[in-house]
Image (tube, rainbow, N blue to C red; front, side, top):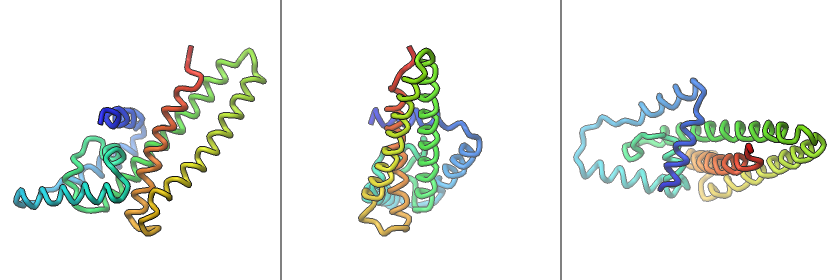
Length: 180
């Protein structure tokens, strides 16, 4: 669970675009339930949400990232889950792009005196990134295979997978050629 909190913190630090913040806030606001139900009904709903999210391949990590502090146990509809999974995917993709750009800038800086070697290194990084994107975009639909293509559970599972893998790749890129 500590890794989840760490990734959640990194994702939150990566959310810099005001539009995404507004979208995330609207998503979180939609999740709060104001129903007057008995505790046994609420407990059953919590169980069902956890079960559905787990079966959809979402597990706790991407859901935690998507809601960034919201109580996921209070959700009752799949629409907010789908929306927030999409927001998490976009935020993770933005972080991945930022990590890639920072790596390229580090390589420019570190190989300033050997530009040919720097260009060769950058070409390898670019090739690796393109191949990794193909892997991610093939693996994530594989995780969602048991869900019907195009259905909300499928889209959510793919979005959660893309978010998770993109954050992992961002961490990897951040460790290449660190600043000295």
